[in-house]
Image (cartoon, rainbow, N blue to C red; front, side, top):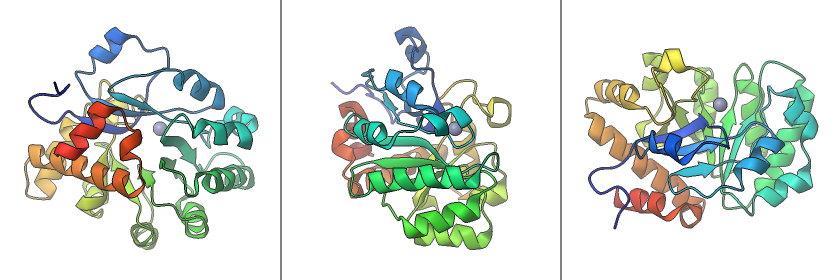
Length: 254
Ligand SMILES: [Zn+2]
Protein backbone atom coordinates (compact mmCIF):
# COMPACT_ATOMS: atom_id res chain seq x y z
CA UNK A 1 0.00 0.00 0.00
CA UNK A 2 1.25 3.46 -0.84
CA UNK A 3 2.30 5.66 2.05
CA UNK A 4 0.65 8.57 0.24
CA UNK A 5 -2.69 7.24 -1.02
CA UNK A 6 -4.58 10.37 -2.10
CA UNK A 7 -2.35 13.00 -3.56
CA UNK A 8 1.29 13.86 -3.85
CA UNK A 9 2.81 14.92 -0.52
CA UNK A 10 4.43 18.30 -0.02
CA UNK A 11 8.09 18.30 -1.03
CA UNK A 12 10.81 20.33 0.72
CA UNK A 13 14.25 20.08 -0.89
CA UNK A 14 16.25 22.06 1.69
CA UNK A 15 15.40 22.17 5.38
CA UNK A 16 17.31 21.77 8.63
CA UNK A 17 15.99 19.09 10.98
CA UNK A 18 17.75 18.04 14.18
CA UNK A 19 19.06 14.47 13.78
CA UNK A 20 17.47 13.55 17.13
CA UNK A 21 13.99 14.34 15.81
CA UNK A 22 11.36 12.00 17.26
CA UNK A 23 8.81 9.89 15.39
CA UNK A 24 6.07 12.12 16.82
CA UNK A 25 7.79 15.21 15.42
CA UNK A 26 8.14 13.56 12.02
CA UNK A 27 4.45 12.65 12.25
CA UNK A 28 3.68 16.35 12.71
CA UNK A 29 5.17 17.00 9.25
CA UNK A 30 1.97 15.40 7.90
CA UNK A 31 3.67 13.18 5.36
CA UNK A 32 5.86 15.90 3.83
CA UNK A 33 8.95 14.57 2.08
CA UNK A 34 12.02 16.50 3.19
CA UNK A 35 15.61 16.59 2.01
CA UNK A 36 17.20 17.28 5.40
CA UNK A 37 20.57 18.97 5.01
CA UNK A 38 23.26 19.06 7.70
CA UNK A 39 25.90 21.67 8.56
CA UNK A 40 28.85 19.84 10.08
CA UNK A 41 30.57 16.45 9.85
CA UNK A 42 29.43 15.72 13.43
CA UNK A 43 25.79 16.43 12.60
CA UNK A 44 26.16 14.32 9.45
CA UNK A 45 27.50 11.35 11.43
CA UNK A 46 24.46 11.49 13.68
CA UNK A 47 21.98 11.99 10.82
CA UNK A 48 23.27 9.16 8.65
CA UNK A 49 22.60 6.60 11.37
CA UNK A 50 18.86 7.19 10.82
CA UNK A 51 16.46 5.40 8.48
CA UNK A 52 13.30 7.38 7.76
CA UNK A 53 10.71 6.70 5.09
CA UNK A 54 9.91 10.35 4.31
CA UNK A 55 13.26 12.04 4.98
CA UNK A 56 16.52 11.97 3.07
CA UNK A 57 19.46 12.97 5.26
CA UNK A 58 22.37 14.85 3.71
CA UNK A 59 26.10 15.01 4.29
CA UNK A 60 27.07 18.65 4.75
CA UNK A 61 29.84 21.17 5.37
CA UNK A 62 28.19 24.59 5.70
CA UNK A 63 30.48 27.34 4.32
CA UNK A 64 29.39 29.88 6.97
CA UNK A 65 30.19 27.54 9.87
CA UNK A 66 33.96 27.82 10.61
CA UNK A 67 33.92 24.65 12.74
CA UNK A 68 32.50 22.70 9.80
CA UNK A 69 35.26 23.86 7.44
CA UNK A 70 37.84 23.08 10.08
CA UNK A 71 36.48 19.58 10.72
CA UNK A 72 36.25 18.71 7.01
CA UNK A 73 38.18 15.56 6.16
CA UNK A 74 38.08 14.37 2.56
CA UNK A 75 38.33 10.63 3.26
CA UNK A 76 35.66 10.80 5.92
CA UNK A 77 33.44 12.84 3.61
CA UNK A 78 33.92 10.45 0.69
CA UNK A 79 32.91 7.55 2.97
CA UNK A 80 29.56 9.26 3.70
CA UNK A 81 28.66 9.02 0.00
CA UNK A 82 28.17 5.27 0.47
CA UNK A 83 25.43 6.04 2.98
CA UNK A 84 23.51 8.88 1.33
CA UNK A 85 22.61 10.23 -2.09
CA UNK A 86 22.28 13.82 -0.81
CA UNK A 87 25.20 16.22 -0.36
CA UNK A 88 24.20 19.39 1.52
CA UNK A 89 24.50 21.88 2.81
CA UNK A 90 27.67 22.91 1.01
CA UNK A 91 28.71 25.99 -0.97
CA UNK A 92 30.22 29.44 -0.56
CA UNK A 93 29.18 32.28 1.78
CA UNK A 94 30.13 35.96 2.05
CA UNK A 95 31.35 35.42 5.62
CA UNK A 96 34.82 33.91 6.10
CA UNK A 97 37.79 33.01 3.91
CA UNK A 98 36.89 32.49 0.27
CA UNK A 99 40.06 30.44 -0.27
CA UNK A 100 39.23 28.00 2.50
CA UNK A 101 35.60 27.66 1.42
CA UNK A 102 36.63 27.17 -2.20
CA UNK A 103 39.22 24.56 -1.32
CA UNK A 104 36.72 22.51 0.68
CA UNK A 105 34.03 22.81 -1.98
CA UNK A 106 36.41 21.83 -4.79
CA UNK A 107 37.37 18.69 -2.84
CA UNK A 108 33.68 17.86 -2.32
CA UNK A 109 32.89 18.35 -6.02
CA UNK A 110 35.83 16.14 -6.97
CA UNK A 111 34.62 13.44 -4.57
CA UNK A 112 31.08 13.73 -6.01
CA UNK A 113 32.23 13.37 -9.60
CA UNK A 114 30.59 10.31 -11.22
CA UNK A 115 28.81 9.48 -7.93
CA UNK A 116 25.00 8.96 -7.87
CA UNK A 117 24.27 12.02 -5.72
CA UNK A 118 22.41 15.32 -5.78
CA UNK A 119 23.94 18.41 -4.16
CA UNK A 120 22.25 21.33 -2.35
CA UNK A 121 24.43 24.41 -2.68
CA UNK A 122 24.40 27.66 -0.74
CA UNK A 123 25.77 30.77 -2.51
CA UNK A 124 24.81 33.79 -0.40
CA UNK A 125 27.01 36.77 -1.37
CA UNK A 126 29.37 34.61 -3.46
CA UNK A 127 27.32 33.60 -6.48
CA UNK A 128 30.05 34.65 -8.96
CA UNK A 129 32.84 32.55 -7.40
CA UNK A 130 30.39 29.63 -7.13
CA UNK A 131 29.57 29.81 -10.86
CA UNK A 132 33.31 29.80 -11.63
CA UNK A 133 33.83 26.70 -9.48
CA UNK A 134 30.84 24.86 -10.96
CA UNK A 135 32.04 25.67 -14.47
CA UNK A 136 35.38 23.97 -13.75
CA UNK A 137 33.72 21.15 -11.70
CA UNK A 138 30.38 20.45 -13.40
CA UNK A 139 27.94 17.89 -11.95
CA UNK A 140 24.50 16.78 -13.19
CA UNK A 141 23.01 16.83 -9.68
CA UNK A 142 23.39 20.49 -8.75
CA UNK A 143 20.53 22.22 -6.88
CA UNK A 144 21.19 25.90 -6.17
CA UNK A 145 19.40 26.78 -2.95
CA UNK A 146 17.91 30.31 -2.55
CA UNK A 147 19.93 31.51 -5.56
CA UNK A 148 20.01 35.29 -6.03
CA UNK A 149 22.72 35.67 -8.66
CA UNK A 150 22.88 38.33 -11.37
CA UNK A 151 21.09 37.74 -14.68
CA UNK A 152 24.42 36.65 -16.24
CA UNK A 153 25.14 34.21 -13.38
CA UNK A 154 21.61 32.87 -13.65
CA UNK A 155 22.10 32.18 -17.36
CA UNK A 156 25.41 30.45 -16.55
CA UNK A 157 23.66 28.28 -13.94
CA UNK A 158 20.88 27.32 -16.36
CA UNK A 159 23.44 26.45 -19.04
CA UNK A 160 25.25 24.25 -16.51
CA UNK A 161 22.00 22.30 -16.06
CA UNK A 162 21.42 23.38 -12.47
CA UNK A 163 18.13 23.08 -10.63
CA UNK A 164 16.94 25.77 -8.21
CA UNK A 165 15.27 25.21 -4.87
CA UNK A 166 13.12 28.23 -4.10
CA UNK A 167 11.15 29.45 -1.11
CA UNK A 168 8.35 31.84 -0.30
CA UNK A 169 10.77 34.48 1.05
CA UNK A 170 12.10 35.07 -2.46
CA UNK A 171 10.63 38.04 -4.33
CA UNK A 172 8.38 37.54 -7.36
CA UNK A 173 10.97 38.79 -9.84
CA UNK A 174 13.49 36.21 -8.59
CA UNK A 175 10.94 33.37 -8.81
CA UNK A 176 9.69 34.46 -12.22
CA UNK A 177 13.23 34.56 -13.67
CA UNK A 178 13.71 30.81 -13.11
CA UNK A 179 12.48 28.17 -15.57
CA UNK A 180 9.62 26.13 -14.13
CA UNK A 181 11.09 22.82 -15.29
CA UNK A 182 14.19 23.45 -13.12
CA UNK A 183 12.34 24.46 -9.93
CA UNK A 184 12.17 22.55 -6.66
CA UNK A 185 10.52 23.77 -3.45
CA UNK A 186 12.27 24.44 -0.14
CA UNK A 187 11.67 26.11 3.21
CA UNK A 188 15.24 26.42 4.52
CA UNK A 189 13.52 25.85 7.86
CA UNK A 190 14.19 27.25 10.43
CA UNK A 191 16.39 30.00 8.91
CA UNK A 192 13.63 32.07 7.41
CA UNK A 193 10.56 31.02 9.31
CA UNK A 194 9.02 34.48 9.37
CA UNK A 195 9.71 35.34 5.74
CA UNK A 196 8.60 31.99 4.28
CA UNK A 197 5.62 31.47 6.58
CA UNK A 198 6.87 27.89 7.08
CA UNK A 199 6.14 27.00 10.69
CA UNK A 200 7.72 23.58 10.12
CA UNK A 201 9.68 21.83 7.35
CA UNK A 202 7.51 20.88 4.37
CA UNK A 203 5.14 23.85 4.55
CA UNK A 204 5.27 25.01 0.93
CA UNK A 205 1.61 25.96 0.29
CA UNK A 206 2.32 29.67 0.03
CA UNK A 207 5.14 29.07 -2.45
CA UNK A 208 2.92 26.79 -4.55
CA UNK A 209 0.18 29.45 -4.59
CA UNK A 210 2.57 32.19 -5.67
CA UNK A 211 4.11 30.10 -8.43
CA UNK A 212 0.61 29.14 -9.61
CA UNK A 213 -0.21 32.84 -9.94
CA UNK A 214 3.05 33.66 -11.70
CA UNK A 215 2.61 30.80 -14.19
CA UNK A 216 -1.15 30.96 -14.63
CA UNK A 217 -1.46 27.46 -13.15
CA UNK A 218 -2.86 25.78 -10.03
CA UNK A 219 -1.07 24.86 -6.79
CA UNK A 220 -1.83 21.18 -7.48
CA UNK A 221 -0.17 21.33 -10.90
CA UNK A 222 2.81 23.21 -9.45
CA UNK A 223 3.27 20.46 -6.86
CA UNK A 224 3.08 17.80 -9.59
CA UNK A 225 5.66 19.76 -11.58
CA UNK A 226 8.01 19.78 -8.55
CA UNK A 227 7.76 15.99 -8.29
CA UNK A 228 8.30 15.60 -12.02
CA UNK A 229 11.38 17.80 -11.76
CA UNK A 230 12.69 15.68 -8.89
CA UNK A 231 12.10 12.57 -11.00
CA UNK A 232 14.04 14.08 -13.91
CA UNK A 233 16.94 15.16 -11.67
CA UNK A 234 17.15 11.87 -9.76
CA UNK A 235 16.89 9.84 -12.95
CA UNK A 236 19.74 11.56 -14.73
CA UNK A 237 21.96 11.26 -11.64
CA UNK A 238 20.95 7.64 -10.92
CA UNK A 239 19.74 8.73 -7.50
CA UNK A 240 16.14 7.53 -7.94
CA UNK A 241 17.00 3.97 -6.86
CA UNK A 242 18.82 5.25 -3.79
CA UNK A 243 15.82 7.15 -2.42
CA UNK A 244 13.56 5.62 0.24
CA UNK A 245 11.04 3.53 -1.70
CA UNK A 246 7.93 5.59 -0.89
CA UNK A 247 9.66 8.76 -2.10
CA UNK A 248 10.81 7.14 -5.35
CA UNK A 249 7.23 5.91 -5.91
CA UNK A 250 5.89 9.47 -5.61
CA UNK A 251 8.42 10.71 -8.16
CA UNK A 252 7.52 7.89 -10.54
CA UNK A 253 3.77 8.44 -10.15
CA UNK A 254 3.88 12.23 -10.63
ZN1 LIG B 1 20.17 25.94 4.75
